[in-house]
Picture 1 (spheres, rainbow, N blue to C red):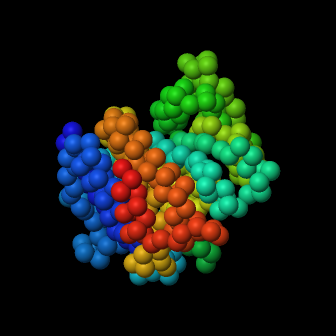
Picture 2 (picture 1 turned 90 degrees about the vertical axis):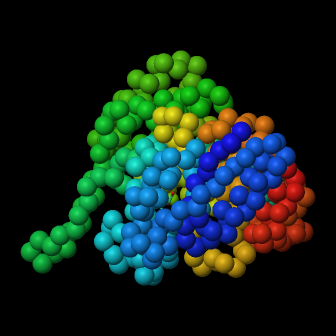
Picture 3 (picture 1 turned 180 degrees about the vertical axis):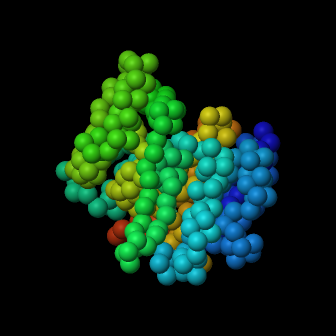
Length: 360
Ligand code: IPM
Ligand code: MG
């Protein structure tokens, strides 16, 4: 199979983790007889530095014409970087939002799975971890607060800022359909997370999700308020199979879910549109504090590449090969600093990439 992949290394640790993911993809290509061609484009702070904008038309076009996009991370140290005090549409993160919107990537899939080997790195008590957990967070990605109108103004000497949260029923329906579809291939349970005791958008969310649920009688649907969900994730993570939620709640809950897997450096993600096209990226940020020091964990990006093979290219066997190579490396005791525990072998970003690639 021949695939054209646009890579967007981005800022901070982005370039070094994308490099390792491509190394692993190259090994897959060699072993299974595929050809992956890469085209690298800039996005985020590096694009601002080079072109004055976080995402150029050309970069978006290249991404649109590719078969899939592999992204590292964008942004600097929040509040403390040269990219912070600029107009909202010129910040590094605006590039990420623009590409999500521009490619209509409304469905963000973030699987959070606890590897047995990482139980030591999981901050939860053993009794809470129990048999472990294996959940998928389905986050709506192109609506809600992130894309509502926002402005800041001064009224009578008082500064006031506004962000608006809007969802229409179609936006809710299409993400709900994806969530139920995924639940059908898993343990057939959807927990839809909202704040229906306060927000109108959440009441509509609940109503539409219930309508969609009627088409999936085998799937058990429950609703959970977002504050309760945040608590349940650290109290009983094993109860979750598919978690369906809106953009902002999904952002917050997915960080929480990633941390209980042992490290935020473990969580991959796929952002999909209606077709097979997707953008694949780790759920974590650009970690500027450790950039360029060979300390970053490339596993989330490597696993994102596996998701790309599975969802965009239908290469299940090859995706399995990457996932089991990661599993092997962990079983053999290799750890990047973020998941290090006693008795294990500490390795850097590059060596972790080599170890995974060697096991394909
Ligand atoms: C994520 C990130 C982004 C988001 C930021 C960088 C804009 O936190 O992908 O979760 O909030 O969506
Ligand atoms: Mg986030």
